[in-house]
Image (cartoon, rainbow, N blue to C red; front, side, top):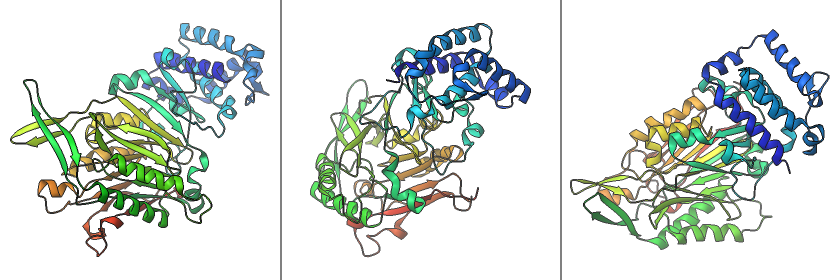
Length: 462
């Protein structure tokens, strides 16, 4: 029922994006008090209905605009501003609408993925969305690391789908979780993240193919599925006992039976029990019909998203390079939640593509990134994930010990890592590595207990 308001706001945003550049945003950021007062006076004269005593008022009903003919006036106003090149006035209008419409998106959640609050997202190539704030990010971080119109919005956030497609050839959809999803983390003041390599006893059967165009490979089957199921359930239980909020498994060690077992255990779990399973679980990815996907499930065993790998891995074999024969869907799924910000999953090689990674954190403003991998190296991941530091994006990477069985390596130098960023002491930020020193198997445990945990603090003196 808010569609006409959201469509109008998206039109304002697109109009600004078509005219503004970085220099204009910087100039607006440093606008003088007298110029700011002039902009407010002009807006008050045009739209007295949405001002009270010269200050912006929040609009409580979607019918307000239609009754006052505000929407039609906004369209006229925008066109006049474009003709007179008054883009600063449009930015001020956008920031005022952001405040006026804030109550429309209070406690916003979705039952399914959406492509924006506005129904004209294809026409305007803009997705208007509620802004979920991140508790570990610096308050003005965006203004320091990237300059765009989002810097001047507090309650809303937009995705320029035109720019995103030009840079990544991807579309994007969104899921909004209830703000209470991470209430346990809120109460204790930190988010608990667990990563697990799952097993070191799994082998993949790949089929190599040569034709006159290229060399490629597909994953045909995976060994020891019953062991994977057993380990996954054991680690899921341990994560519950340790209070892990988000549990992440690696790439390639998945199977439909594993996902089904994890979901069924969650679905059968009594809600009134003293302990609680992880709010989100990134299931191990598995290869099926030329796709490599990671399914994210909630604590009730319901699918939240299923993220596909976009960039194929080139496998060196027999003196040749064999490309992973996946058919990418060119689609990104974002998970939003108040207190966490925006979460995304990118699979292995996707994180090695520096441009793809940069656009994920710069264009989509991702604040928590999960990278399930199946890789013989760590260096490239560490170098690329360092991009996340500037954006206060926490990054989580987990690898597979089982690849040692397939490659003949003795052991992985690093099994996983968690990059902590944001409003924390710089002595506490940085990479926290999961190595064999804290491997449960090497310490008389076993892969069925493989779990490395780190806490992302919400509170800071900075």
